[in-house]
Length: 284
Image (tube, rainbow, N blue to C red):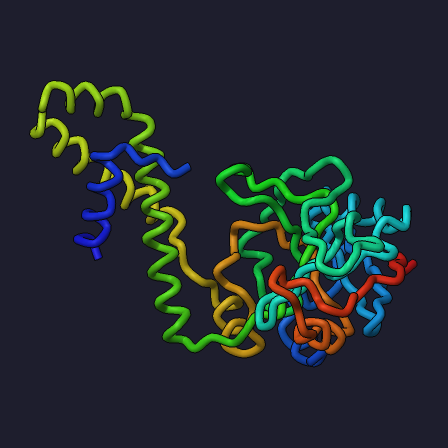
């Protein structure tokens, strides 16, 4: 393992690459009981009704969602991106009345939200509700879309598959930490390269590798027992964990989500026949 990491780190070091079934839901909820500050919302769609819970622990996302629901913002929007064994996405205001074939997914209320990534407390198990966002390359702070969200369907993984994914997560974590250290020492590295100081470069690399290992050991990138149980029983999308804000979950109506998940789609993953949110209502 150290040899693999060392090779990857050496490349980064020398190039200075600084990279910035409803019952199932009930069985494996991210939260088993409603907590203070949680809000329930009923979503009426053209394929059936879904009830979601917004977490009190992610108040910015909860309050924004409630505000939009009360304004009727979501009434008439389409599920514009649907991928089998992955998720269903909605919340683009440009989808209201959009003609067939129109590419969607860029619309919003004109603002985004600070990330509230509460990981590993909340993760991408089946039924999780999470905020869509732009990619890391243009959104390194991982700020959320002001209105677009998705509901996870995902798939079930074996223990062996999760083990392989955890190794990848560990390597990615160490690579990110190492790249951060390289950024701090950029001037020194450039100076040593100009002077062809190979001994100095090797010594600094060894130092940064050791610092990387120590930093990663403080908070290891590994799946919790709750994640392993969920992903090996009801499923989900573990590769998204820790990178998107999960701010709620499906309480009932997961069978409706399952129906939406498998509708025929076009090359943009948009359903060929519109699947629409008719209305949303806060449960008082």
